[in-house]
Length: 253
Image (tube, rainbow, N blue to C red; front, side, top):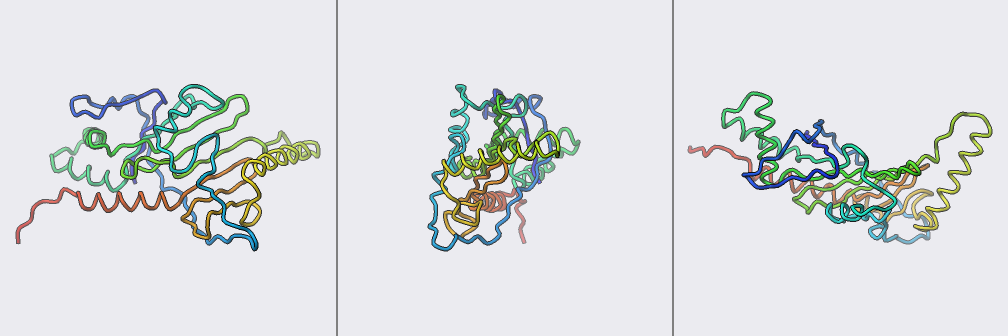
């Protein structure tokens, strides 16, 4: 499991060996594995595949680079980076294991020094990447969470999650349920107007029956645009490359 480095949107870092990364600007937490479900999907009878790869949520599309997404929201607009930890950086787990081994081979064992060694090597070698970008629309409470692949696959969007408050009400009385249903109806009407009618069940848009191809799912007050194949491919590249680049000793036998 890798480490995630979270910082404010305005914090940048240099990759040069002589310009150490200021890790004090970062909040650090353990990363978690992505919750990817690849259950079988079926396009409704009589329906056609949908070009989900052309879908966008507030202008964010699958496959966009982190730089493109960052630029999209850098000059104002409806959404802005959240106040804290807007950008999250991480190191792919297999690479972190490599760096841990490499640092310990240099007789670095004190925990703080070991962490510093790992992060510095990762930053200098381009192994630290922007894995998440979190945006908010303060006027409405809407949020967008964008997830990216590693630099090994060009740091591209593989998942976009949108959320709003249409499923939230102040209580359980009849008036609140009535209000909730009206909010949901308005949201769903807007979703259908933008993306068309779902072609899988009543809440999914599929580009094929393959769960690793781009798809979108709608929930009460939420949308998930996802490309499981892009994520899986990135993970596989990192595992392969880290295995090939593991700094093993040169054994002779």
